[in-house]
Image (cartoon, rainbow, N blue to C red; front, side):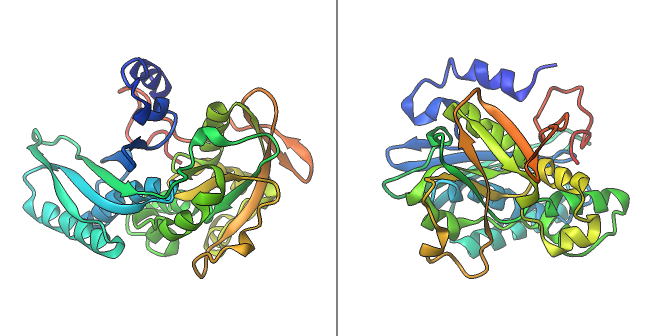
Length: 321
């Protein structure tokens, strides 16, 4: 079975321009522009019965989350739209695209449309371009001695997805987070000049943190008890070790994970009102990987650190929490 990691290794032989950052980051940096592309697929990133407007919103938001991790402001977007023959679905989807673009000041400047074969699942894509400051944090910039900080909370989206898998009519705060993620654009803009490394958390904190360690060549020590959970999450799933591991591996959080110098203090920054930022661990010298602890004691890593895309034998939603 071919996995995402194998494909990236092959693509690195092609993507040799410095703009590609060796495909070890979530964005390309070309002539000062930040460029990212994310696709979402029916049955993988959204459910067939999700409201189409929420699917459009989510497609925009997940791309803007990559800009947030680089401290970039939105500058333009190109939409790849697949037409299924259901004009009502597509009209509502575009309403979601429009609402998100208006909310975050993202101009839609072009794209492409194609028609899908009958009964084919929808696959939708967006390329987003942004402008950043002089310092554009890379996944590869973390150093031993840095502290790990997380902007946002974990687990709400994956808990909302679990509720919908149990009951397609489920509603509430967790379902809303799953369907309408909020990119941390303003927080990212203010944090980026101080970050050694920064990335968004989309595939699960533990998996994305491991990617940062592999790019940076160090070990991440993560304190399970310090991971920020919302009141809605703990009301639904509790605060046990299992619940925290669920939150740490679920993905779709669109939080920001940053490595900052040990003397960094976020209270000195004028972060947006309501921003949650939490020190969750540190980076150490050693073989890249994750060390997880709880109350100072080692915790065995779960079999799956997050969601990694694999070949066609993977059933829809099978690897999602």
